[in-house]
Every structure is written in C-alpha cells, then in structure tokens.
Image (cartoon, rainbow, N blue to C red; front, side):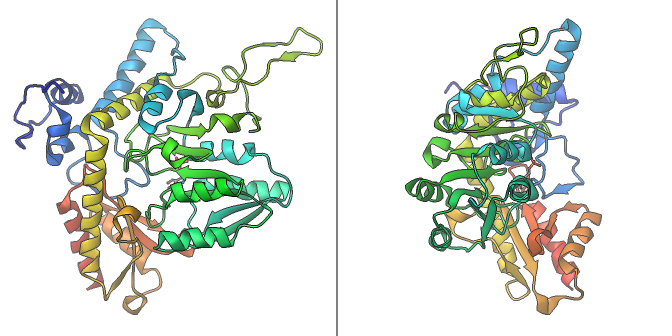
Length: 423
Ligand SMILES: Cc1ncc(COP(=O)(O)O)c(C=O)c1O
C-alpha cells in the first residue's frame, strides 16, 4: 500500500482541528489511518472531552468524515436539485465487506425494521415454532411475538450459557418437529456475549430449519462474513459499531430464500411496473432481490454517510479495530474481576465469546437497596460517564460498551465511580 506523508499524527501528536472540514482533510488527505494511534484517531470524533461515552451498544458516535459526507451530499442535492441516484453504492460497499451479493442486501432505517421484514416474511403457519433466547432486545423479538399473538406461531426460548457447547446443546434439545426457525442474536444487547452463530446456523441447516440472526452489534466491532456464517437472514445497522449516521440499517436475505419470503410493503423499486388504467389494475411481480425492501424515496445523504463510515472502517482496518475493541473489552473485564467478591461479571472471558460489551451486576450481598444497578448507571451519568442499564428480561445488569474511540483511562474513570459508589 502506498504510504501517505505524515503530519506527526502517527507519532501521537494531535493537531487540534479548527473545524470538521479541516479535521476530515487532515486525516483523510495526509495520513494512513491504519498506522495512526488510537488516541490520535479520537480526534475524528466531535464527542466532547468531558464526556465519557461507554454506551456505543446503543448508538455509535458519528465521526467527522461521516458528518462531512452527509452534509456534502445534502448540499449537493439542494444546490443541483438532483434526486438521489439509486445506484446501490451502499449495498455494493457493504456486500464487499460482509461477503455476499449486493442484491441480497436491503437498506432499512434500523435493525428492528430488518427483523420485521424477516419475521413477517418467513412462511409460517399456526403452531409452527420459533426458537429464541431469553436475552433478546425488543427490536429482535417484538415482531416474532406479535406474529405469535396474531397468527398463533409459538415462541420458545433458551437461556444463555458461557459455554458454546452448552448453548448448542440447549438449542438442539429444544428442536422438535414443529421448529421452523431459529432466531437468535449474534451478540445480545444484554451481556455482549458473542454467540456461535456459524455453528447454530449449521445445526439449523442440518435439521431443515431457517436461521435468522439479529446482528445489531457485530458490524464494525468484529469481522463479519455472512457467507462464512451461512445464515438465511441477518439484520444489522450502521449506527452502532460501524459509526454511521443514526437511523440507518440493513437486512440480508439469502438469494435462495427470497422467492418463498412474503413481502407486504411494496412501492417504487420493489416492482418494475404497474398500471392503474388496466382492468383489473396491473402490478408486476415483486423483484427477486433484497433491495425490494428499500422502496420509495430514500435518504441519499444518509447513505453517503454510511458509505463514508464503511470506508473509514476499511481504512483503519477491520482486523485492527476488532483487536483493539477486544483489548479494551478485556481491560474492562480485568478491572471488574478485581472486584470479584463484590460484583458478578456476566460476560464470558473466553476470547471467542467476547467483544466490546461487558455486562456485570453488583452482588446482592452488597445491595444497599433494590435498584442498585440502575441507580449506579444514573450516578455514573451524573458524573459524566454514560453506561446502559439492562433491565429487560429481568436481567438487571450494567452494560459497558467500549469502542476504539474509548481508552483505558475512560474505563478507569468508570471504575473509580464504581468504587466510590460501592463505598
Ligand atoms: C441486539 C439488538 N437487536 C435489535 C436492536 C434494535 O436496533 P435498532 O434500534 O437499530 O432497531 C438493538 C438495539 O440496541 C439490539 O441491541
């Protein structure tokens, strides 16, 4: 790779940008991002320095190059009255990164929308069973639960376990002749455990069961290859670990599954032709590509922002990002484990089962009062450290998400607050 000239950033010298445009110019035009230190890359983010954001699992921080791309595109459209061009630039870029055909990708506004396309699309009848976990996010499970309520499909759940073998065993034990779908998160929002989705999908395939993965978190955190995982359906987003503009997602449907997948919401780009002057009115067949879900007018500037996020990710290096995210995640674990008698670390420590999110809870014996975990999250927020309390599914834990724009000192500050809080 041709190396660009340095401005001292690789050596750790941060040149404070005067504006986002200058920042973008500095980093993009003059540096090899894959060589710059993590602390210097922090300058790509407008996040205020008095704010310690340890909640990337809810929303990623948008870096300047993404803001710049959105703004540039929005301005271009306004200046030229140019309708955003449906050229699938974003789908092609994403397909290159996650290893699928761009026609297998549809652009959505978030993960929940992708899950809805899948959950309402899979052909099921009353009594058919869907196997899930007890760690679902509302966006991962609500569509399936609503379908159960309206159409009588049956949702079964398994609890998680730190061991991959045990998870596979529990799934296997719960499969019967009515099981049609296994719908699990790749990385649950609760404790951030990386589940063995490749093995889960292989098990599903072996039994003739459809696999559907809620992939809200992996893209941008760990290297993701859908052909390797070999799932039937996968829903993800750009606005968490990929650090794209907020409210941007995608859905993958394997080409072989498209024909049998029902679709109810159709409009421009879902069909090639219609004619209301015919009797009866005519509607062409819905196209056999996942892009049929990206119907109607779309947010072109936002998609440009997503492309910029993917390029930034590629420029820094997916492997490098994964290894830094895991390094920071391990640092969080090591600090929490020092408090082993006072807190319970819920995320497994095995290398292949952890990423950038850790869940822990303050032990009952140390509970000053019932809501100690949620109140610690509030206490931390008041002191400038943003965490996520996980109250869903009765889990009652504190989630710490660390991305590459964080550093060890952010974690130390969270730990200081934890020590202070627990007295
Ligand atoms: C595992 C999981 N699934 C689904 C969702 C819903 O994502 P979105 O808000 O993009 O719809 C989230 C959001 O945090 C999540 O963590």
